[in-house]
Image 1 (cartoon, rainbow, N blue to C red):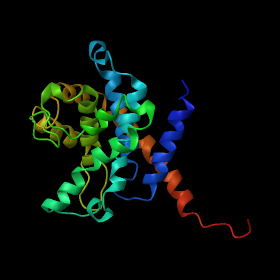
Image 2: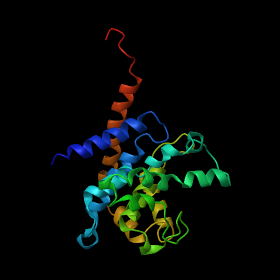
Image 3: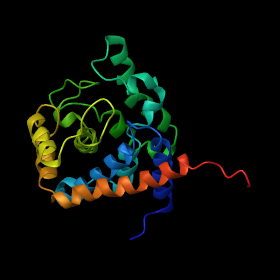
Image 4: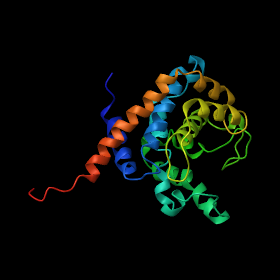
Length: 217
């Protein structure tokens, strides 16, 4: 089934924004693909009440607020200082403030705002367990997997099986344990296909960005 034009347009805009950033490099689209894959494998009773269209929007725009964070913090390796960490932690709120005035996004801004909450209550807003909206918990699982498997300038990547072990290690503390088990039960080839699709799209846009202008035009 062909995706709505709006979704295709939003995916394209995010890809263009991230294509020339080696530390984003399709991360948001990857999170979106993984979140929607997790949604596909959720039991029907857990999917109830989650509109997949708005889940797509929220998972695609989860990091739009990072454009309001100094670039040096996004690319900096090692531990951030207290003030630097405060600035970094603002990106979900910045994203929510950017998107909230847009009527269609009001239904899902809290899913973006709370995607860094932790099940144990030690996240950015200190929500705990089921206080965190289920879609935000889903995005958190996808975001964590993507972050530890995608290449970054300041850290090595992690293989699929090792990444699943890491998810299980933080289940019940950082991530929703039930969602982690659902995610870990998804066939490996389906998860890896998400990465391949993102890589193909990002590489296409990177070539366009790097292509020298034709002076004869």
